[in-house]
Length: 265
Image (cartoon, rainbow, N blue to C red; front, side):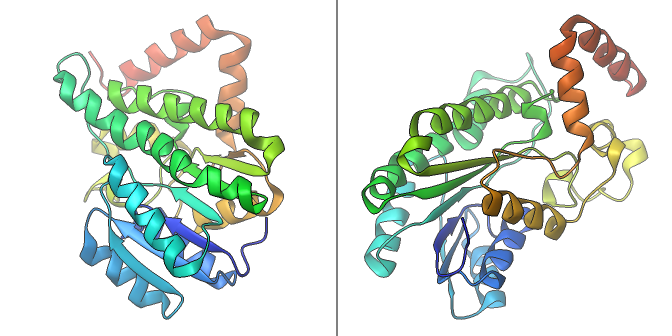
């Protein structure tokens, strides 16, 4: 799919990868870019940076009705939604110690938001002959996130859902790409993103380098153009994923050793 003259909704567009995607879509000639974020002011700032093709709206992606509302408003204004970018996310350390509602919240943001977006846009896309979903997961969705159980689980589920959509709706004109990067210089790394040596979470993700958000956005745009499912801005992830599939037990042993090197108990 080419993005020229397309209408796109982008979640988490107030900063980082979402902002870079919004700017990149506009540069590709998108007719309308709807920038949404939990922080309405940051979404508006992104739209202002882009100019007249961009609009903004507040959106809590954990609220299915809110996603439906933004989709309806976009369709009423522009007549269609050609691309839905389900990108919003956040980080949280912990595992068994975290209360269940924290696990549920992360599932809402990282997994059920993709389901809500698909429900909101796929029927209309099929009626119009096709459309595209770009879902942000993480390398953690193919591998794991050592210091965050809910992050690892919710991102795995995000990849699985994208696979399911592609299998079931690909022949009806629905394209799907799933973004699985390692470390990207965004707010999710926190204020110490430049001081990786003392942060186990950052060191796990940053072993193969920290990419800039605009690099990741360009990788996504290329994948949409090629209609390629996996978007791996860090190519090393493909190698790790292959090793995991080839010998799961060896991979698990290696991850335990890696956890020890990171200071895990």
